[in-house]
Length: 301
Length: 247
Image (tube, rainbow over all chains, first blue to last red; front, side):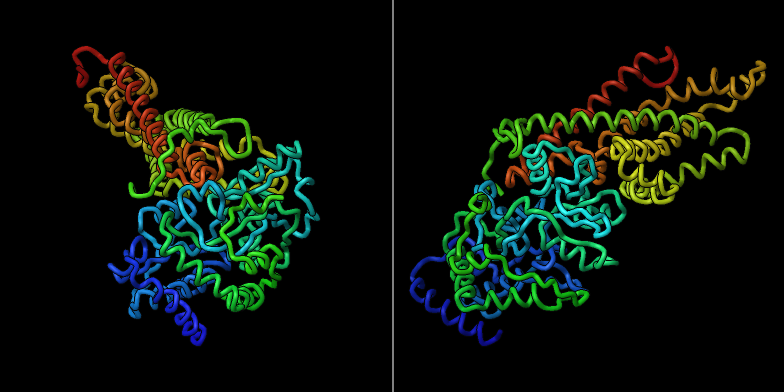
């Protein structure tokens, strides 16, 4: 890890040296002037960004963001740069990045065309499939078995819209029930208020892994959607975006990102030491070979 | 914020990503549910609150105690928590078949739960105002009623309550307005009311946060203010000439 950061610093230093004459602007200037960088984090976006037992933010995206912070330190020659974290929600993450409260959002945000009007994204670092969690005992395998049955999802998420589109397309009718957050939606599944909970696969895995009886649940169905997940940045800020892009592209090239993926998706992780055992998807492999910030719209077949 | 935010008021006339309706239709749909929850809850609150408030003033220890317990329970527990108790806890206490019916098949269960929770919560507050109204009348009123040969019930019906309700119209107005504002918690159990639509709009428009919050805010102000106007009309119409308040 340490060694890698040195190497990274060196690479960034090289890039930086070609640009020293250039005036700092945007986020990099803000960071330099305040000697502070603020990361937006999520408290329960498992395993990308969540709190451990000591309430410290950890996760796959947190590790990636920390690598970016190291690159910022060497670019600005600020080894003592202060790193702050600020918890955000799906409701406030965009305003907080736009108004400068946070400099980078290290959560689990879908990169889509509508959002690109307000914000920018780092290269895609995770690709999520929208699937459903069910109780194994129900024997449910597909959404199309659920006509007339209660299906849960969380308010203020893309899944609400995906379920609606699916119903229209297939001309079926679920009884949608909505939790105000993922924990509430999972509670609905747990207490039989819903027979399925539709959500991003990584979030479902996390909820199941941390439930009382993980062996009772399964993740099934055809993906309702395939969505690129990325670190979110301010728009119209080429200097900072360039640095973030170069840092992450370098991690992808050197295999560092694949190692981080293995650490969070194929090894035991806090808080319960569960191994999610999720092999890397073909879409993510493609995104690692060709680092890009293509929106979700490009992933539709 | 003004720096980079891309305003787009036209967003309300755009169609939602998966359908033929516009966001404006959605907002109006949400407004409909907000008004429905608030008015239904207010009917429950007014009916139960009047009964409980009255019970708290009757000269009988046991009955007054029931009223007291009611008020303290529904007034001292946060509305969101009460809503969750009705939604997540109470159905688990029912017999298994009934419990499954309530959880999966009961029509409009989210709406009914929200109305019940908000109605009971507000009833405790109305009850306190009714009690205060009755107790603000001079003791002579009750004595006069009884001296004229009225029973306790008749004394309440014809002497005490008609005056008490007139006195408490101003605080009741605030409570009626609160019913609209508190109805926002219903999103937490999944009713498509204004807060829910606002949250979903933020998501589906890709971050038109400010527009998605301002419009519901204005609609809440309009609803509350309409409640205020309605109550002031009632206050004027029911005014007893020569007797306290009103112009």
